[in-house]
Length: 130
Image 1: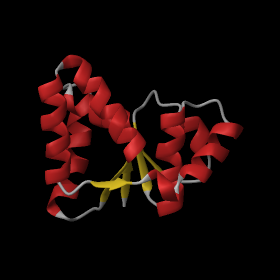
Image 2: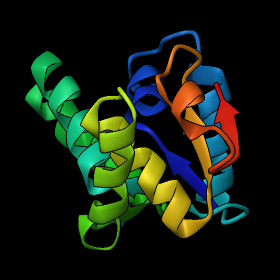
Image 3: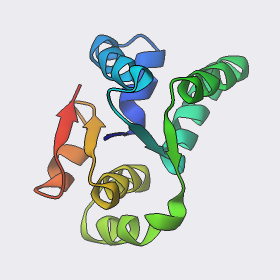
């Protein structure tokens, strides 16, 4: 299972240098070779960043994620773990939710090279850095 932080997806949709690596992972999700998951908190981050660029683009990209079989993980199952991570680290709350989702679901956390997650994850989860 691949758990996506918001940064790789925003980078993909904006055509940033990590887009090619993220595209390969999204192709695996779309083909059913991998299960892709995104916390609803991280989905909100992707949406608001893209919405600032273009509301129509934000709507279209979120529909695309759903068409690719991306699962949206409710905060109900992960909020307590996210709060514990936030309390013990200096990472943004959105990153805490991405990490908590990967921990709870025992997934591989997909994050960007400059992510706060690289330090905070420690031995909690395996990272796939794009």
